[in-house]
Every structure is written in structure tokens, then in C-alpha cells.
Length: 126
Image (cartoon, rainbow, N blue to C red; front, side):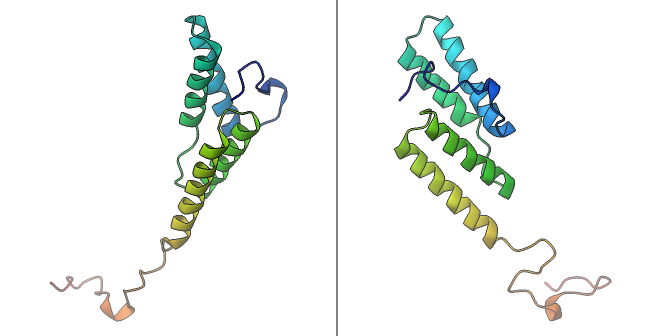
């Protein structure tokens, strides 16, 4: 794992805002640890943890896309280890598959037919 001094300074780069948020979290955590007198390696580990915690949840297509961007950038900057990145990218693939499998809000579930739907003025059968 690279040290924070080896990590690319993101202030001059035009990063995706979500990736930038993760980078900022890394730098805040790293700096806070170094100010406490913690060594470089331990501060980098805290920074990496903060970077991962700032990544988006895998709940929407946009979040999954941003999550992948964060993982990829984290790998390039040595904030996320390659073996961890593989697992994280697999998790994003699973989440994407789960989103695709969800029925559309305006479509009935596959086991529902029009004949099973009660009319608005009639109570549902028990």
C-alpha cells in the first residue's frame, strides 16, 4: 500500500464529485491521524477506511456507477488493495444484477394477472 505522500493530489484533477468525496475523506482521516502522532502506515490505513466508508451504497444505477469509479480510482491510488477491489467490484456486479431483476414500478408482478385484480369499488377477496 502506498503512503499518503505517494497518493495523487486530487486538488488539480477534475474528478467525479463522489470520487472526490472519498478522496477528501481519505485526506481528512490521514491528516487527523498524523496530527495525533500516528505513523504513516497506520494513518494510511485509517484514510483507506474513511475512503471506503465514503463510497456510495449500491442501491441505484447511478450509485453503482459511482461506486465502481471510486473502487477504480482507489486501486490506481493504492488506497484500495487489488484483492479487496476484486471483491468490491464483484459486489457491484451482484447489485447491478439485483436491480435489473426488480420489476418496474408500473408493471404487475409476474404472478398477477388482470383477472386477479379487484375492481376499485369491490373489496379484495379473503
